[in-house]
Length: 419
Image 1: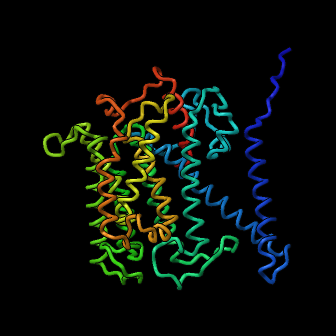
Image 2: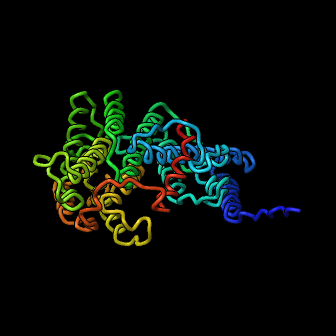
Image 3: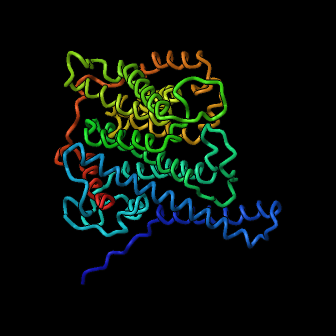
């Protein structure tokens, strides 16, 4: 008689769920207790409001992590000319996956990082991407929906000021800014993940991203939060079409110049004139596209600060990470995935950073801008981490590299997110 296999308890998954539930309970009880003395409401009456806070956070993270799951599919399939549509299945056993196996982050934890049917391992990179993208979008949503856009460097007073323990009052302006910034960060993550895999950015994806960031700003001028010139005025400038166009043009120019400065170390052999189709030139062009998007979204002034911090973070990661499959990632790969993180921080703390004298902003002195530009001539030296031959886009072969096998398994596993 065949013995029935005893199912082991997934303590990691159970521990994560229990910890999240405990945090939510403590927040609801603690938030209501803190708010009760300063309001006319009773403790039990505030429990519902704090519960709604948890629902909002869960919803934001679910949306963000689902976007991260979809970006995993985009990063794997689009550079290889594959369709991002279709149902989720294992590419080896061809077993169609259950919906709960495709849940971002938690599906991977519940499966213990392996396919339920054939038990092949799934790379932890994919739940990590879902987690980080989810946190980025959640952070933007919380500060712009709960904070009443107080994170942006615009003159306040017309937008209701909300405290962390208050229920959000979502206005059209708040929703518009959140959607635009979410789309911008999502786009940067999509491009960054493709470049992290040493793949060339698909032209149709780049054009789509530029259409989103440029089209959104042209359709709604307030999205151009800061002016295109340095100014000492703290009053919000009445926008015009010419001002918005100049704002975007300066962002494009700044992004190009910053990318050329960084390219001296991440694509030293690039030559747009003599070798426009070369592999090194392709790396430079991709970096120009990414930095141009940054310049459009946060303005040319802040893009200098974003580039400096992203370069420092990417250089540190490139030097510190020593285990496969990440050891062969070059400086450009790390820079591509640190830029979305730093842009998120720029959006979340935008108003605060505008008041910091040493941070490049629309209120900064010309010397601050010059200092940031000079740093970009020196700091990118930390990104020179690769031999010349490793700059070519790689085609993973599942039969040769077990790490790339994991990536393909998970790339197919997450395909349902795009349906």
